[in-house]
Length: 262
Length: 314
Image (cartoon, rainbow over the protein chains, first blue to last red):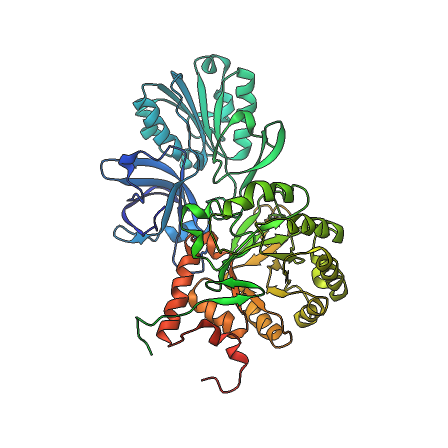
């Protein structure tokens, strides 16, 4: 890999309260195709030592024609709040796309996408690529409350979207697993899920009962993003034994069959 | 002076090793090299220090294992590694392709016997240039740090290791002690060939929402630019009291930081957290170190080792 020059920011939009879409020049030539939905960009929010570590933000949209990438993030900590200050024309330090994304399987026809909260953004690029591969896409997204909804209209461009909220202020009251009925799941060849660990664990359990295979994009606190600090591990059952896999390099997307939740 | 075409000799001799420059990645901040090798030719490094290696495989601590802090980070990895046999079979041979790149293996354990067994295994390896004894990891229960905070125990450990080691033995010291010089002198008298310092400073962060320590195992080791002044002071003090070489570690982000450690008395340095921020940190820091020498008319970097302790310098 060649040295990574900083990349130019083209747009930085506010999508909602504390919710931002950041668009910048891709560090790699997207026409070469070496990127996947579910991968992440590892971004420095400032050049100062105040915020030393990069922030992993998942790829939400790849604009191949203009060679631009968009990430959607919620400013929920001091580092991401610092990132909100960056403007079109600024240059930022971006590493990636990194990690293993969502595989798109030739034999699948009907796919089910399940997202929770800030786990929703990577599903947009995934839905786009699944549709481009001729597959049907059905999406279930869950949020705490109506004010946190994101990307629902965008996802609806690729298939039906069901919205669930914890408090019933938008869509249907309940968890995403409430929507995973036997009838709906009988129409899916595979599922793809991204969200908080509690949601992924519940989705994994439900979908095992429903007999649908799938992929989970795991969330762990990351350091380096390239597999050298061994900070972001998650338990997996592999080759007959329990081990710790690096979420940044071996994931963040894993086959649900090997993922072990505490 | 200030001639951009000036040749600068960055080479240093460390123990019996020839380093083409004084910069090496620190243990645990480089894994075993495969990942970083996709970013640059590891042959540009002065040496490498691979991840702490224990007798048996360790899965490490619960997550979260890392947390950013002001100008630094906390980690509590807990020495996750595949065990010495797999390290020797699967990891170290990958580094053979970098000829004349010294490979230092960090050895960890929970009892003297563990350290001795790991060292004995490594002693037969053609891929090892030196051993770094990790008696300073803050992140494992009864693992290492008690040897790193008691001079008598440290000396017993060093003597036991020296009876089985066929390679030079570097002892990595903890800053979490009252008197770093006492620890350094005890290791030197017990036969250590070199010292590396400092390991991380024990720290903690609290998750305000959960009202619990943020890291899965509670406390962790603080690293990064925040700890550099602590490291500089300790290298400076230790350098004045021992005659074995000192490797400086702690928050190095730039070439100027390398120069600072060398002036404090370090013969070489290890770069840790900077690798997590920028995979290309080491080659950049080497270039910056060379550039500093050019700008300051320093023809051999060896001239500045310990400069801060010598009378009548500038």
